[in-house]
Image (cartoon, rainbow, N blue to C red; front, side, top):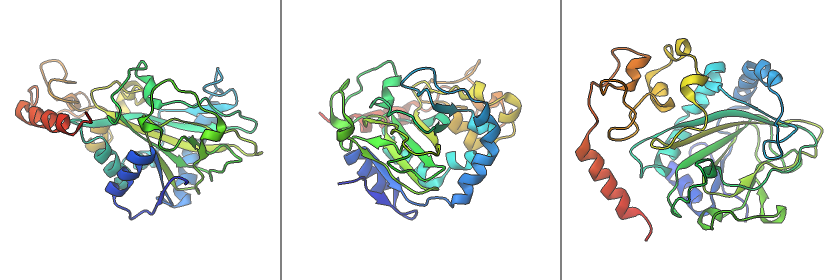
Length: 292
């Protein structure tokens, strides 16, 4: 059975149910294809200047262009998309908060070989997270149509509950085929990888991922987005980028101040470590929901 497809008016709870079961789900036509064309136009100079990968995992004919918040106003809207945010918030609700993990255009060129099947959460030093405890909610927006021929992301459906360090063959995976403007959502624990591009066209996808705020971000948003650009951004986006406390006593600046004061003086919630009673209540609720 292929990955489940949803419409743009589906409920985030439905999508999270599919993510928990299969590890991935596709929301068809979440934005108009022209939105993806606009994002590509904004990013084209940066994509052109990006060198290809330096090893087999990153892809010798694949480009990975980041810093999308700083470089594309359209991608800022993708990051803040209500459907995606609602789904990410539901999937990661066991944590105090979640944050933007990385932003990246992945351009898989013709002749690219299939990527090693992996889990994205291995980026956290290969830490063995408990099965069922998700630390990431990931998206790949189709900037071009995704087909099996041009390198659509391949998913080992239902692999979220499997052990770490497993190896899979191409036959174990299925391609996440979708049209431009659609988005693949997948968890940090699902086994997946970029497909081989056997076409004569480059496959473009916008990879935007979120993680629980007590883990380090893969893309350093504070340095990827220059201070003068950050100072112009909406507060909600800044907080998602990491200018917020990640949990009780986590992420403050200097004299226990709200970190958003670093870019938007006066916009903070005041000094202090956080709300300890609320934190304890959330932790107790999370622990009660963890699988035994």
